[in-house]
Image (cartoon, rainbow, N blue to C red; front, side, top):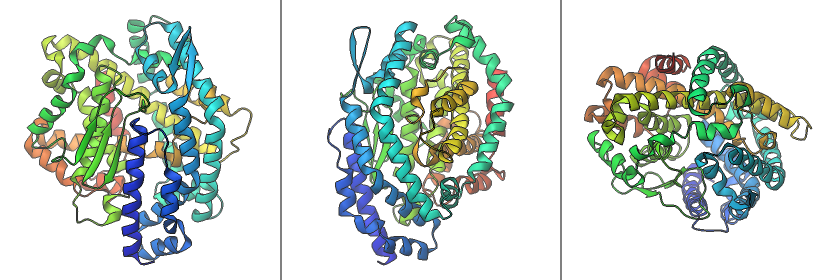
Length: 491
C-alpha cells in the first residue's frame, strides 16, 4: 500500500462513516451500519496500513490509523449504543419519556422533584442498558491503543500518539480547579440564591440543567431567528455561514434525533452537516454557534491541502474555533446587538452575562474534573466496586452539584477527548485576546477580523493547538487568559 492509496481509501472511508453518523444521529435512520462500512475498508486497519503511516513520517496519519483500528473494533458497541438510545424509554411520574428527550425535559422543567427523579431514572436506565456496552468498548480501545503505542500503558500510548502530555495537562487542570475554587463558589452561591433558593450543599446535577437554562430570557432568542441571526452576524464579518452551501443545517425537531448537537464532515471542505435538536432559548443559540464554528472551519479548509491537514490532526484546534464562535453569545456587546435583549436595556444583558459566566466556569471545572477522573479510570480496573463513588466524588467536588454514580462509564468521552476540550478553551482565549487587541471588542462584526479568522481556518489542523497559540500570541497554552476573562465578569 502506497501513501497515496492510504489517503484515497481514507477519504472514502470518512465520507461513508460521516454520512452514516449524520443519518443515524439526526434520526433519519434507525439501524446504523458502521461495521459494514469498516468491513469494506478493512485494508485500512491492516499492519500494512500502519507501516505505511509510520513510513510517511506524519504523526497525524499514525494516530489516525490507530483510531481506525479502534473504530473498527468498537463499531459493534457504537451501533448497539445508538440502537438502545433510540428505543429506550424512562418512566417518571406516570409519564413515558424517550431516553433521548430526557435531558431536554430535565433542562426545561421548573419542578425540582420531577427534574431530580427524571435525571436519576435516566442515569439508572443508562447504567442498566449501556454500562456493559461502554465497559466492553473501553476495554477494546485500551487493548488496541496500548498495543500500538507500546509498553501496555494506555494513557502513555494516547499521549504518545496524540502528542499531548495528558499528565501535565491533568496537573494544570487540578491547579485550575484550586485557583478558581473561591471565585466559583461565591458566584455559584449568588446565582443559586437568585434562581433556586436551596442550600448549595443540597444541589443535584439536574439542578444545574435548570439553573443554567436562563429560561427567563427565552423571548430574546426566538427559534425562528436562530439561522438568520447567524447568517447576518457572519455576513457582517464578510463570512458566509454556509460556506457557499458546503455547510448544511439540520435544526428541526425529530424523533430519534440525538439530544446532543453535533457537526459531522462528510467531505472536507465540500459537505459538512450541523445537527441541532432544539432545547429552547439562549442554549440553542450558543450550541448552534459552537457547531457552526466547527462547520465553518471544515468548510473553509483549502481543498488542495493534504489529507492529514484537512481531516486529521489535533481536534483541540477545531474545538477552539467552535468555542470562539459560541463565546460570542456570552458577550455583552454581541447580546446587545444580535439578541432581543437590546430592547430590554443593559440590566438584562448584565444579568444574563453573569449567569452565562457562572455556567461557563461550571463547565470548565466539570471537564477539568473529568480529565482527572479519566486518567484514574483508564489506569485502573473498570470493574472496581467503588467506580461510581470515585466518579461522583470528583465531579461533585469540582462543581458543587451531586453527580449520579450511575454515570461513571456513561459520562466518559473516548480517547481522552476531555483533554482536547481543555486545550481548546486555552487556545480560544488566546485567539479572542488577539482579535480584541487588533480589531476591538466588537471584532465579531469587522470584515478584517473575519479575514484574519478565515485565514487561520483555511489551514485546517496543519498545526496542533500549542503551535497555533505560539504563532498568534507568542505565548504557550495556559489557563491564565481563561481565568482572567472569567474573573473580570464574576469577581
